[in-house]
Image 1 (cartoon, rainbow, N blue to C red):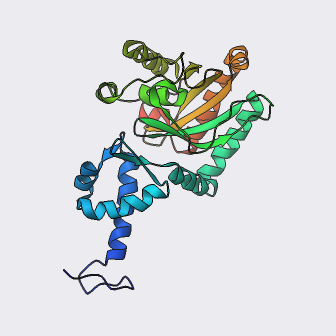
Image 2 (cartoon, rainbow, N blue to C red):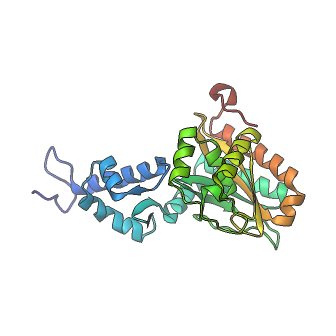
Image 3 (cartoon, rainbow, N blue to C red):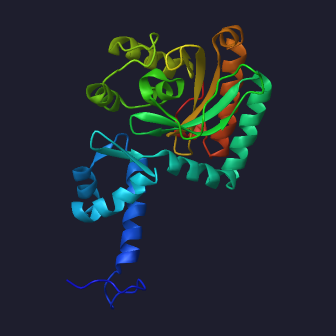
Length: 272
């Protein structure tokens, strides 16, 4: 078998190993970003049409550098890739809009504001602006949460198709994070249905026993979910300011959706 030259330039009509590896890495990131679940080595190998041995050569350093994570022999995007994405967003027109809207929402509510995106069966905080108050909800960029016990995750589930929702519950072990985590499938299905109707999710002590969250959807131009805007607050303030938080979060999410080109009258998805 011929090997690629050290300068990355192969013989005519052949793809050199350097560019081929780069293409595979980019395809790998794209595949995992589009997937609604974690993927095994066999699944990745099949989807990318790449031998397992060659794929492992790429997966090992990406995992070591936290661009990918591996758990129970399945791979998913790691915190480093979300930090990388945040840096890109900061210099992207939408990133500027996002930070501006989040800052305004912090000023309106006095609470921590987060932007979450889906990563398989979890959500990841891709952007966080903390409350200026001494007692506040604290989270770091790149932190992930299960879908079923976070406000942003429940928003993601609310906009799944019935088939996607069935598949999620079939493959997911509903392990509680706190004593308040809801792990009954029927109760969660009812919550998801309610969120779809009201346009927001509310959690109380389900991920952190002393914190509550309000999550609202942000839509892309095609009407699909782009992410979820979340307000995190201590329990007492969240209960006292519930109406303010929900109203302000919805208005802010609508701004972000419009910035992404979303038009409810054209897509058929309603902004409640």
